[in-house]
Length: 116
Image (tube, rainbow, N blue to C red; front, side, top):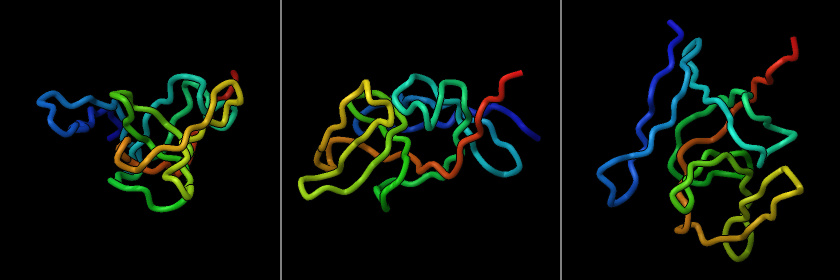
């Protein structure tokens, strides 16, 4: 059955975890993207297939929590930490130590919204 399910993401030291609303479809989890930080790769209203993980594994697109915000970003290792990148050139990339953000999931695929 395909249904929207809330995924609790517990924050360290917090009693109220943020929730990500995901859809389970054919055994996979998908969440609906918001914001334009990853345009044109991921547009608002696209669905992103995710696999839960708790740490950086390799270069790729991840669901992360940074500064209290849950966001989808491209991550890559840098000699001074992890480079958190947006695909939208309007926004700047930043290099941060790994302890400054939390990995929640890694993106597996993007389901693009088709124009009718």
